[in-house]
Amino acid sequence: MELFVTIFLLFLYCIIFYLCKMAFQMRNQCCYMLGYVCYKAAEETKLDTGTSGEIVLRNKILGLEEYRFLLRTIVSSGIGEETYGPRNVIAGREESPTLKDAISEVDDVIFDTLDKLFAKAGVSPSEIDILVINVSMISSAPSLLARVINRYKMRDDIKAFNLSGMGCSASIIAVDLVQNLFKTHANVFAIVVSSESIGPNWYCGKERSMMLTNCLFRIGGCSMLLTNKRSLRHRAILMLKGLVRVHIGSLDEAYGCCMQVEDEQGYRGVFLTKALPKTAAKALAMNLRILAPKMLPLKELLRYEIFSHWRNKSKTAAPEAAKAGLNLKTGIEHFCIHPGGRAVIDAMGKNLNLNEYDLEPTKMTLHRFGNTSAAGLWYVLGYMEAKKRLRKGHRILMISLGAGFKCNNCVWEVLRDLDDYNVWKDSIDRYPVKSLVNPFMEKYSWVNQPVNQQA
Image 1 (cartoon, rainbow, N blue to C red):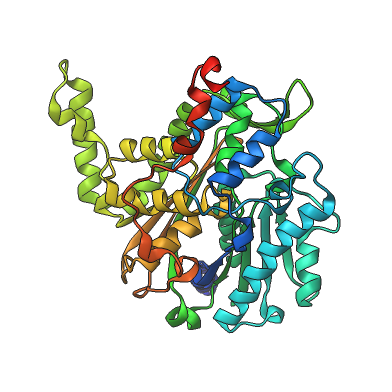
Image 2 (image 1 turned 30 degrees about the vertical axis):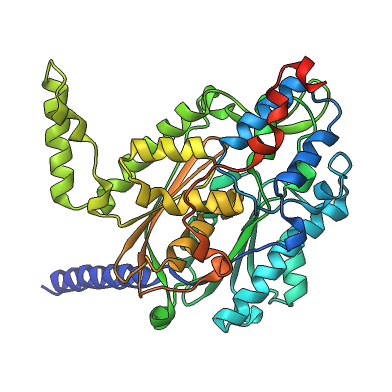
């Protein structure tokens, strides 16, 4: 009898211990965002039509056909007149960037956003427990992390991580790293900084598939403050509800569709292949196949299964078959898509059955700030907030794609009505613009004229 009681008590103790452990882990699994700050560069670094034209015409190895290609690309890019470029490129030193140029460019973004974030959140740098910085195209020694820790005199036990080479989806990777650290570190603050090194990686050759990045990528960055302190929930603006990462780099075509290489003349740049759109669609579908069931209501999932089954069995196509796709709007109010380029945004909208209202924040972000790489998502979020779209209880789907090839998506829940104008303060009243047509064609249409007329 005593043996039975002992075994029973031991079994009961194990159950209680397991339940307590699970409860403790669940308490630390929350991930709140307390605030974020996007970078706005100096006015003298704006890349308007005139400045962009001067940069292109400086490249003496370009011919008339390259000029025509660049004109077509810029005109249809969705980029406006107020994006920001690297100082060394504007100064005419794109072919000979220095280490000082590279470090100075990133320092401006990181320190400006962190200074404002600490002041805005009322948190001291000494209180930060976790620091993650992602800048894909630069690796300095000491690291960018070390520069931040030194400047703000952070604690010597800080958990610091420097992510590079992760591309435009690195921001979500950094958030995923933080939320996993939250599971084993209770009541902590975390900082995530996302940016990109543009100036030292400006392409100076004439390979068309490598010139695209010059037309789209611009200076930008964002710093955000996260925590798993439940006592600070009332101060939080967002709560992470789900995050899924998909990496299809095992496929050769996907691995090579976006890659940093040197052209035949030795100029370094990012090479984009024609397989990129197909690869992006495949990675997105694989990601949503995992994420959507966690976020959408059961009714929508059942509808999808029934229509999918009927479509597969039906021998003839019918209009109803088009409705078999998942309706993400049954569980998501806002779509925060990486502003990588107009064609990518339009394709994403078509695949996900989104309307112009849904795509407006992403298109307007591309127009105002360009493609700011991993930081782009937060400029889109800022647009939504400045337009007072975000209300308590709303859910936001963030979609990011990156070289490798990766698709990293996450869902945030809005914890209170948001109305901060943030980085959009000086321009939000002008948006949405009625037309995305820029003045490049009007000013440089001469490149399309026959050679004898140009003379």
